[in-house]
Length: 238
Picture 1 (cartoon, helix red, strand yellow):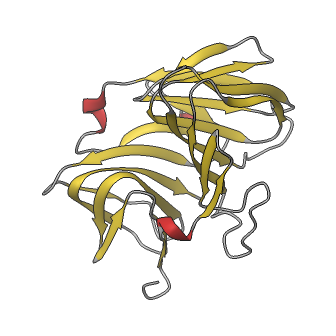
Picture 2: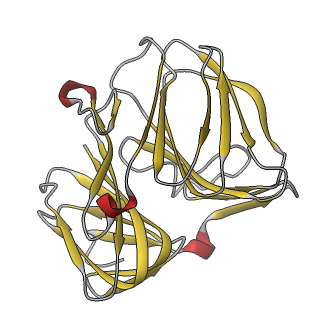
């Protein structure tokens, strides 16, 4: 904690469940993991890091009234849903599913040999009972190197090179090498959550490594410095 504006959630402090086929770590309360101090942050409700063993996965299950984003770090994740969508999600792609009035989907490791390592994100929508939708985009990894690459943003200002969500929130990916720096200017009335997914970076004087998250509020500008080929997700939240 730093003067009430920065709060760090270290990797080892997260919830952890290892079910053999699934090794899951929870930044916020999820399923049978409950931490009253971490029920979410602004409209960011779930941030799970999952490693799924070959040929295994989540069978059909239902969601509603939630914006669900998936970002794969290694391997491939096979998605099927009740809208007839069937796709494999790979690194440098983002999948966004607006559950709306209700959707049933399944997620399985697409490989029978290698594990899949992914991040799943739930963001609360701005309204209930919206029409379900599915989006998936791929991008060149150079687009996230040394800069914030928009993965998802408000539907009201939708872009063809990113996915759309029903919320005034933006999700970015960025990879920084040593000596590189990026900044975001959310405004003092907004909040930022940053999740390191690979390597290490620095925020102010704080060194953050893979699995670490940090909540920032009441700051006009957030500056991140590269240390060791670090990749992170940045959430600009209302």
